[in-house]
Length: 150
Image (cartoon, rainbow, N blue to C red; front, side, top):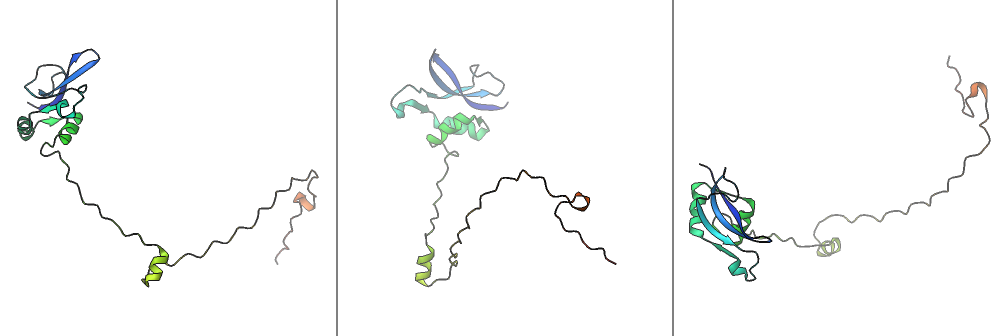
């Protein structure tokens, strides 16, 4: 039998409370449960009392192969349940060096880029003339023709 750790919703209308339970995967959200493992009331002001979990039984069900839902996993991480706490990796900090500081220190580094050349100003486009293009031999316009090779 496949077991999943899920929250069951109960409480009044518009004021929910949740019970963490071990359920058969095929059971509905608020159906029969195998074991109650904890309690979550989002309306309690004190964060310590908001979540109550039985860590020993949760770790037992996880060792047997029960799968927690995504929302339950986030609660396990907050409550330091074994196997769900991510160890913090030390950050590798790089020393920030500017090109000038590297050059002053005499260390070889990247060569500074030469300054960019300013672009010439754009010429304004002249409106097309209203005169038809001049027609020369064959209607090719003013294009030069190549001499025949021979």
